Image (cartoon, rainbow, N blue to C red):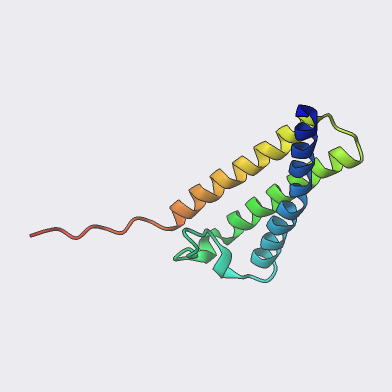
Length: 118
């Protein structure tokens, strides 16, 4: 029974790479080509105060992450990568993209100065 759970989770992880890559590449397209500033450096769904400053970095981040996921899919389908190889590429890419998006969102939204209490 345990081998069936392993197979199911492997397929779930592999099939989830397709919508992840599509979503990130679509966002890169919207930011880079369509110049949609409402998607740049989000923090709690709110875009950056000055999105023109961060649009290039955010577009490159989404584009590279999407292409790395497509590369992992290519490695599985065409080259027949071993399980440890493609999960390492996909997992590292997903985590790095999440962390860098978090950092960029915090950098684009500076903390508000506190008012002095008199």
